Length: 193
Image (cartoon, rainbow, N blue to C red; front, side):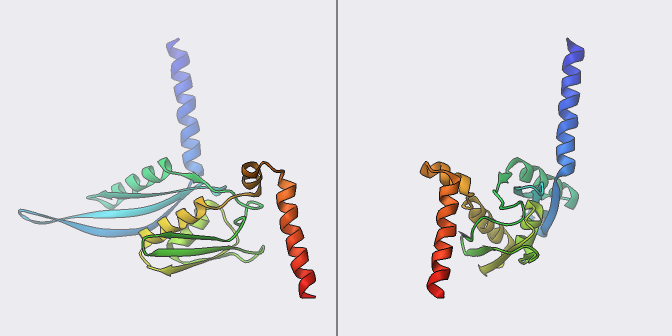
């Protein structure tokens, strides 16, 4: 009985280490922080890390420690615990244009045609690379603070919905939802001509 438990535990550890090795880790930034104590200042480091699997799951973490590697490790662990799933169209771009905001951070993310690439700056680029998005156009409006930019991007990504999710919520079929969108696009094209 003990042997079976040990084997199952080893199997579970192998699976979790394999999942960890598949993750893409991006270090967004490191700040030196100071704590004022009786003898003077005590310095530490704060790390901001984005983790994703490249197939629609992404998370962000923040860690503080006296040494840089320890801060990065803490941030990575937090990012793995807080991963969210984002639906992607054709596994390469967002389903629709999205706006997100958090505090003074405002971001706009737009779908893009194949071959466009990731047109985004700084922390947003790290999120899209970890997420597995290949084509997107994004713009940060407002603050350039990486913490607020990342939180605004996550707020926008949480609002991203696939046609299947919309159809399920409205008790319709996916074809009806997509048919309406294609029909509306055709009608607007005819109106232009």
